[in-house]
Amino acid sequence: MHYKIKLLNHLIKAITIALLISSFLSSVGYSQEADVIGLINSLKDKNEEVRSKAAEALLETGDAHAVKPLIAALKDEDAGVRWSTAGALGKIKDTRAVDVLLSVLKDRNSEIIAGAYAFFIRRGNPDAEDLLIEALNRDGDIVMAEDFLNCGNSKLEEAARVWAKHHDYILGSLPREEGRPVWGQEK
Image: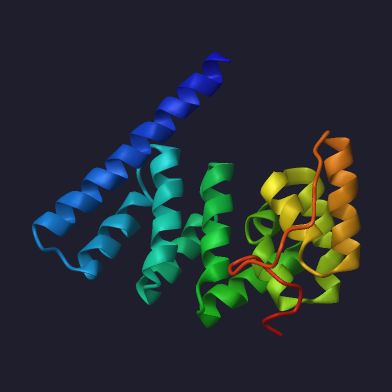
């Protein structure tokens, strides 16, 4: 329990720092380019929560300068940072990000596949199904399971049901929402 409180405090601190930085940069008239440079530098912060939030924030910028540092952050020592980085790379429309994630699939890196699962669902490659299921079982969470259940792929839907039963969750079908991955939507 003490560990969870400590982790929550670090998360609150990281979010507060990110908000303060963003507010400060906006108030002094810095451009998005300055924000991106600051976020790229934050990928090397000592605090893993700051690194993780920086990866997530870089996704929101959509800046192509973020791709190379995000690719490097896939080798971060912290699993949460690698997960956030993989997710960010999976949403950036850049051939370098796509190439790296496809190589991760070939390497069967379950942890990175789990972080970028939405990317792999949207691509709809049948060769990815078993690796996605392995990633769900090894590194998945309730959001990932819900996305599997509602992605339109029967094999992933069944895997989500099995995962939920094993983890004592009740999953339900959700209406199609913008942003939720759909099997093969980006073939």
